[in-house]
Amino acid sequence: MSAAKIDVGTSVTEMLRGFNLTAMAPDFVARISEAGHAQALEVVHELLELEADARRERRIARLRKASNLPVAKTIDDFDLERIPAPLADRVRELMGGGFLEGATNILAFGLPGVGKSHAACAIGHALVDTGHSVLFRPAYRLVQDLLAAKRDLVLPKLLRRLDHFEMLIIDDIGYIKQNTDEAEVLFTLISERYERRSLLITSNLVFSDWERIFPSAIATVAAIDRLVHHSVILEFPGPSQRSDGGTKAHQDKPVGRRKQGASAPPKSGARA
Figure 1: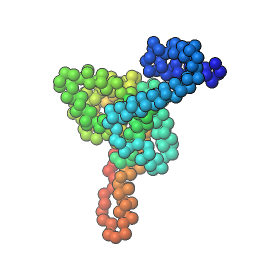
Figure 2: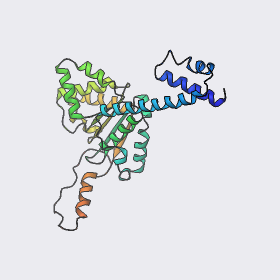
Figure 3: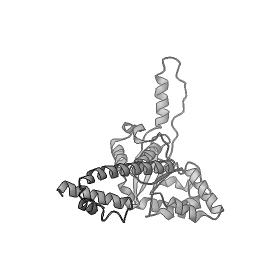
Figure 4: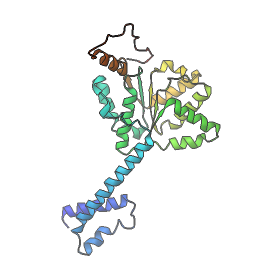
């Protein structure tokens, strides 16, 4: 056979193995060639590629459904020009998923409404597009799930299920002060994933304010140490994009007067 035929034959064999047709894969190309139908391998190759594409699309659809990612929060819906260029470049880089191999965490800080949650979801969607498993959970809901599992004596089972996801996105951690039981299960989750699976956490609190999350100073330090050890930190500066957009829309109205005494964006410990 020609070099092109050999390449096609190798590709056919690899795809058959990828489809777990282990009995068929080793001898298929040789048997077809020996029967005098080597030219048919081109058609077989095309059909196998169609099957591979269909399987890939079905897998991505399953991963997307399981992720619970907000549908409208992709990179196409995110205005990267609203954030500094180095930060936008880092977000694009993280969408490639290279950090997953080293179980690196992503920690996104900023005021409410600056785009950190949207960027987190955009990264999640990009990972799903390349076949990675992702789960998105608001922090309050995840903590309640963990507490319920602990109460029902199935916390280890839930942790194993969460471990199936290559990246777990915990959105708005610290938005609500955690009590001792809530902080305990959250710390358990962080410890379980340490150096094994990636976390992507968004928060409007810098680490110095994390005593609102973990009442114990020792637990606070231990949690931060585990998260930062292998991490990428994203800092989203500026005021809320939501309030800014609302102000611009109001200014663009042809009639009506601007309300006086509008409050400034809420302050937080997020670094600029």
